[in-house]
Amino acid sequence: MEKKIIINIGRQFGSGGKDIAAALGRKLNIPVYDGELIDKAAQDSGFSAELFKRSDEKKSFSFSALFSGTFIGGTEEYMSGSGLFKMQSETILKIAEQGSAVIVGRCSDYILRNHENALNVFVTAPLEDRMKRTCERGEATPENVENFVNKKDKGREEYYNYYSFGNWGMASGYDICINSSVLGIEGSADLIIEFARRSGLL
Image 1: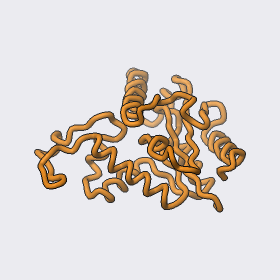
Image 2 (image 1 turned 180 degrees about the vertical axis):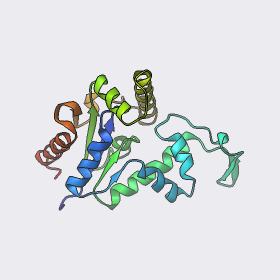
Image 3 (image 1 turned 60 degrees about the vertical axis):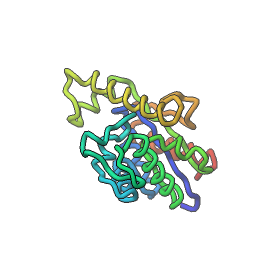
Image 4 (image 1 turned 90 degrees about the vertical axis):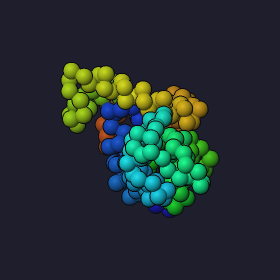
């Protein structure tokens, strides 16, 4: 691509946001960062990827659950969720500096709010469809899937609102919101690309 673009994907749990991100990466031939952000943040910071996994899109995290302490800045203290968020934010900023990318979640739209060529997308879907997809992925049973999905969404909302001072999932905070059940994964990706082109970002 001639132009550099960052596509930030916010998503309800089970809406297919991760699959849409993968489709965007394939269609645009640009890298996609979802779980990969954890490994990259760990590599950049020198901390274990396990720390980032345990705090991934969660409002708070206790380092003491894993270790007795760590030395940061010459003093022994426990790493906070805010500290991990800051390190992951620095990794996201580095990714955006390097070139085009699709970034899933992790408040990337807030972190890159001053990026001149970013497109912020929120993916949603009816609860029934999200529960079905979650069960098909083996992440929950039909008996507990509704509570599971709602709990995941609540965690993402608390995380996003806490670190961005915004409102997760509110349409006014995004450039485009998509119901993935209407056009499916590939169709949703195509719509996002067309929107980016019409917006002059591609």
